Length: 135
Image 1 (tube, rainbow, N blue to C red):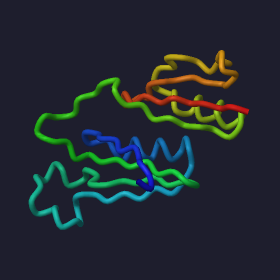
Image 2: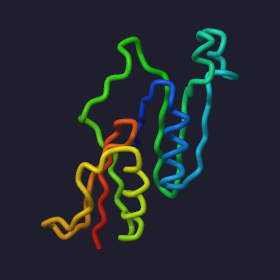
Image 3: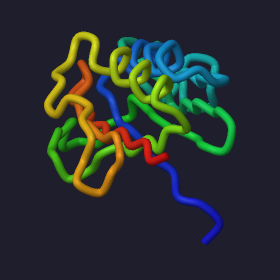
């Protein structure tokens, strides 16, 4: 396996979320909407603005997402988190502040027993993030 990537699912607000993540983390954002795609004629009018596929790319990582929810609907749980291994204390503090805006700072940044600066949060879309910096 060459790489494994996080893929988030939203319910009509993928564009807003991925734009927020880009503002928080930087990187190049690419969005493919239903409208203008080969699937456009098969989708109801209210889904034309939905995002088929989004990618946020920076350095060596990729975050992917979509608004395409199956028939069961969007089910949020705590089984998956997004882990950011940061390169500096300044970086981890900036990312933590930005990503937690409008969400919940569930575990503020603190020095752990293993000597790392670590914290976690739930963003305003209910996605869980783990942030880690080890000198």
